[in-house]
Image (cartoon, rainbow, N blue to C red; front, top):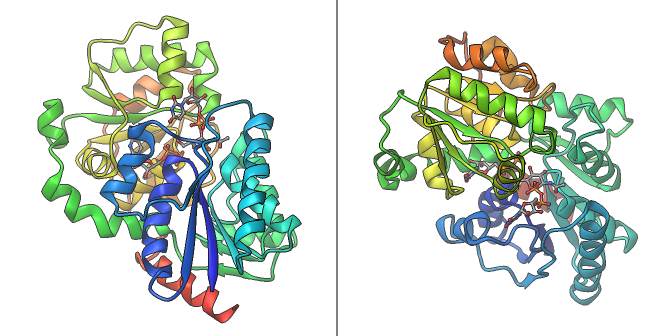
Length: 353
Ligand code: UD1
Ligand code: UDP
């Protein structure tokens, strides 16, 4: 069976690593990188660290407004599909690369498999929510990471081809956790000790594109007095400069990290503060309390027993309090699966070929 896989943004490289490894044991995979992320630290480093095969195509689309970026991907992916004539198209998550891939394939009657189907924040101001809804409605096989995702699809009338296999990000964490603790020197490099710092990532437009929210977040960071290690997404760096926000002394801004360093930084943090979908999950899987600077989350399971807390970024004092307090969550359940999601996905594909 020939499968064209579309990736383009950082979390998709991480998700595709375990699935590609399993898929290629039995099938032919043609890997297409849209070029949505292109800096070494946002792209190549993940291919090297996670031994992801070199993409067969790099479409080099790069950054742009939503329409221009997604449209350019759509046209370029269509050309690849016309040439390669795959049996399936595989997409991950909820980025512009995801929806462009699904739409290109669906129009050519190539069946689509969507890994991380059924997630909903019920907030259409998020570009990802639009991408999720469209991709799910174009897909033939919908691979859900959680039971909530299955229920969300049912509500929208999607019941055929829906499978709950757990989250492939759990596969990646469990596969790489030991490697990270053996090889990463991030704590030494930054000069922090286990449990003595907060790990931060911010990149959602709801935060970066609002000067008020960014000022509120950085002022809460300053007031907390805690050591905050913040590998900064290029989008966030751009806005920080534009808004001329001074970086407080206790905030250690560093370049985006490779996956092993990021796992090690998260696993050893007192807590995590983020707006990332993947980082919320990883904090949960690694049993590290999380503060999410958003009004909603599609990863509702992380909120159980206080492992994750949603905080409105505009309310600086509430952000500050959540950083300063000690969070002691309750029971932990393996809601993201057992780390064998990728094997299940390949079994499902086999049954449908
Ligand atoms: C994208 C996804 C988002 C995902 C995130 C993962 C969409 C709509 N958004 O957001 O769902 O959570 O990736 O990180 O698909 N840039 C660089 N170098 C790069 C990549 C980006 O400098 O290698 C800068 C550019 O200024 C660019 C900006 O970051 O304009 C935003 O990049 P883009 O891919 O459009 O969206 P993300 O915010 O990264
Ligand atoms: N990540 C990383 N380096 C960083 C920040 C994040 O490797 O500097 C990883 C993180 O561990 C997770 C994934 O990137 O696996 C999450 O991607 P991101 O936050 O960019 O996007 P989202 O999950 O919100 O779509």
